[in-house]
Image 1 (cartoon, rainbow, N blue to C red):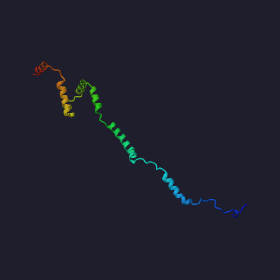
Image 2 (image 1 turned 135 degrees about the vertical axis):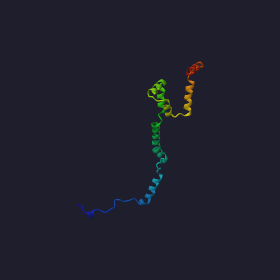
Image 3 (image 1 turned 90 degrees about the vertical axis):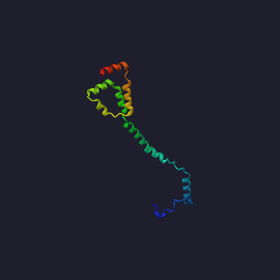
Image 4 (image 1 turned 90 degrees about the horizontal axis):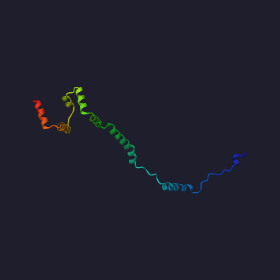
Length: 135
């Protein structure tokens, strides 16, 4: 077997001459020529992250919490006047109680007056007969 002293002591890891002198310049040349990755605009990222969920939340809130007046008006429009009168008579609501429970604005009061005064087709003879009956 060979002895350790008999093995030649040569440096097998040799670096070419001037390698470490040229190395920083080579690294800087490679780094400088690479194109940096394009960065996104931060306002776009934040707008999509925060504004989009807020928009969805606002639309959902509008849909859920919108007034239900249209549905009530449609239901009341489907009920005839005779049925409403029969219901009110059966529940023993006086006219005064009914009027006190509703807050009339000017437009609705005028619409009711127009309907009451001008929806009947009375002739003057009919009016005279009614006046004679009252006397």
